[in-house]
Amino acid sequence: MTKIYHAHLWGSRKDKFRYLLEHDITTVEWTELNPQAPFYLFIPFHTELLPEYEKGWKITEIMPEFSLGCLTKRDNLVVNYSFEETKDNILKFIDINKTTQ
Image 1 (spheres, rainbow, N blue to C red):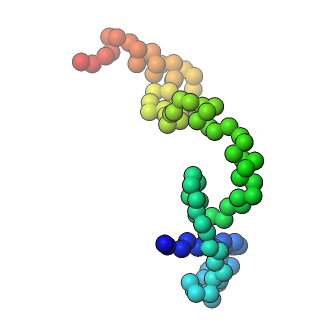
Image 2 (cartoon, rainbow, N blue to C red):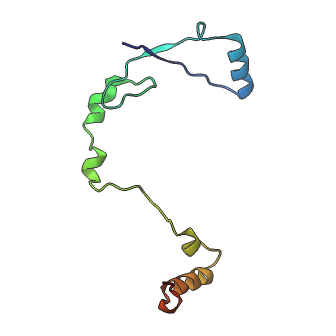
Image 3 (cartoon, rainbow, N blue to C red):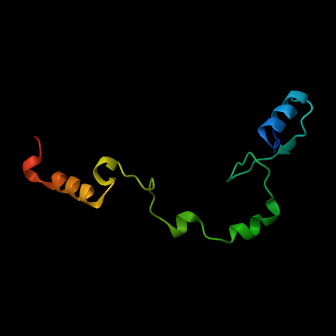
């Protein structure tokens, strides 16, 4: 089976570039990971708190309806610089005389 490794590199861009110039894949301090269901995380994960975490509610239990989140799709209709501009746009939108076939 494939082994998965992880390494953090913290610091300023300058420090990171210096580190990368001085190291390669064989000299980096790697941490071997063992991703497991249901998360399959590719970062270090402290499993000692998992039993406490699993006592909480699942998001699908407290929010059974699925959604893509907030989608506006009609930004040009409802996002404007003033209330009056928004009101005018909505009135034009609902005006049956201005509807095209």
